[in-house]
Image (cartoon, rainbow, N blue to C red):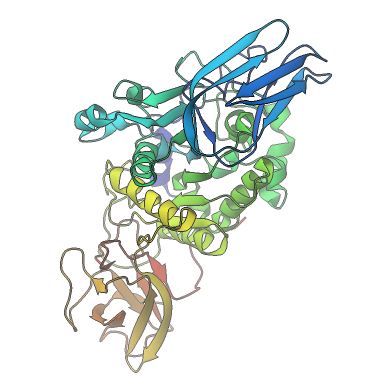
Length: 495
């Protein structure tokens, strides 16, 4: 991996906190609290710990369920599916204790996970003061998972002395939105949830579980990595060499920050991670689908939606086209979005910052995630994607590129182009694999790409760089995905 990528480990919220002391298992799991959202139209498990054999009674909205604690003290009651609504009261009682939870809503719950660009709090936004002042949405509820590194799966999230507001549900208000480990609640998650509340008019719950500077394999269970030989030795050595201060050990964040949530029902996941896996982008083609399959299997709720944020451009603009590990990771994300059912990609190729790995435009990221959800999960008639490469055709000394998702026509960032106008960001190569910048013209819903330096072209790339200069959009104002038509060897690791 290039030295540049070492900077990824210096993210301001990355590796500071390593684990709170373990508390005794609570009567009611800490994922349940007043002001929470429970998943509508789904059976609702409620669980906790009591004396073995103890009967525990759960009551909400006229429905009652009784469970008995097993030999280890674990009990789990099941409430029937209910439609969106509320507020309700949820009561959990046994012969010795009682927990009453108020202001409980039924709606849709989304898990929001990843590394620092997901963790990036609203207080870090350029317009933070006005965003925070406006953040009053009673139907939007926020939950932050305690950061925890664990060698084996936890049954319950521990108390977190670094953030006493963790493991509690909060109504989204100007005061509550500022609570979080990195200057407030996740900005991407907030914008996503806010837009869903506005569009759907149902309660939305956001569970934020992320940690800056972390690798994807830390978020996968041990069993979910069985097809990766390179991870087997670290897994075998985890117990003996476990470091409670290192969140980048294989499987430790799944154990500490995902396992305690299961089987709390969720509608789907938004995921913003990949920067820390850039040096192994070809491996990420398999690793990200494995993570998705792993979480879906553990929840046992089928193929719930999983929407991926493309890692944003970073590093100085290069004068000539060439190889890019960053682009290969973006390609791996796009491949996952195309191949894994129920997934999708929110493109960010136009909203990065070459000088900052944490670009401050999170509003557009949240909006594009919300468009994905509205179109693919809620079946609303909205445009959710920019132009996506479909096919190519060689025409003498040029290559014509065909696209999907050209809604209302191809254009540049600001102005619709007439027939014959040029587009930035395209490179072209012959069989010698030598890339040069190309002239690209929009012709209808296609782009014709050529260069006098390449009289016999065989391949085209678009926006293939750490920080590309590119400007192709569709009429809905969404940017074209980076792509390449070749399958030539890259620069990143496969194992």
